[in-house]
Length: 190
Image: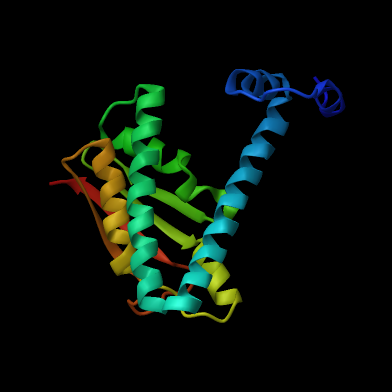
């Protein structure tokens, strides 16, 4: 179905998930993927505005603390939800899949990152740039202390895949800056 046909079919009345899902499934796959990307970009725009206003009104320390609390919960929920939805296992390959497919890592939103290694015993990945860091630099704001904030969020996310997993930040701000690298991570079993 073309976009024009989908728009023309829109009628007055209740909107429920079954009808919305039917509409979405009739769209071309490329269009649907573009819409998902747009939703993720909107999610990150909301995040960047929210955290900037919290920082403005309450200071950077409280903004970082609240950001960390929110992402610990949302990353864990996203990982659990994806794992349940797709019936995924609890190994390192599942973790690598989950990392690629949750909104906290979505490339069109501004994440430039790579998984460097996936074995049965560990996953290593790094982030070259992220929406929050790019936004903050562009606004002339100090980059958050990601090593302190993000380690608990990644740890909560990996534990949602398998409670025996442990995420360790091997590099992030406030560590000395490395050109083209925001942060790097290693996940192993405890």
